[in-house]
Length: 137
Image (tube, rainbow, N blue to C red; front, side):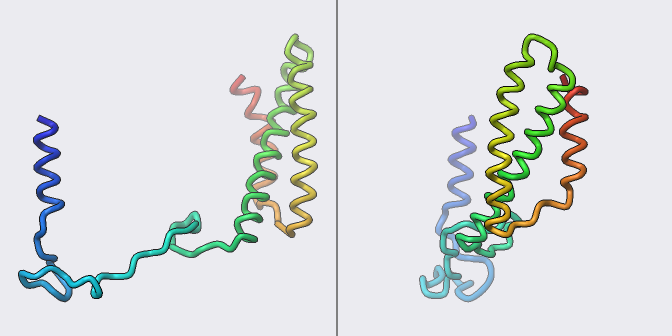
């Protein structure tokens, strides 16, 4: 039954029916030269408005995103250590937190090198990362 519906849908969508508006609305299909130009492939901005980003802009965006992730992970590990630091998993959490501190240090250096500004929401991110961990765990 679903295959029959799919075949019916394909028959409607892929039929050689003439377009309903624009030049060529008669019985003949549009000539190839009057079709709108295809958008070239490439990275688009997150808003989807079609603006391309240069390689430097993409790099800055990646550094910014990695820094924010590092800040969040750092605050989450701080919250875990506050709650679970004296338990049996405390040394494991401390080891992972030390690795994350190294990552955050490197991304902080990259933020300065690429002249990327941190997010305005950084204070909120600090509080949410630290205080949200005990609530969830």
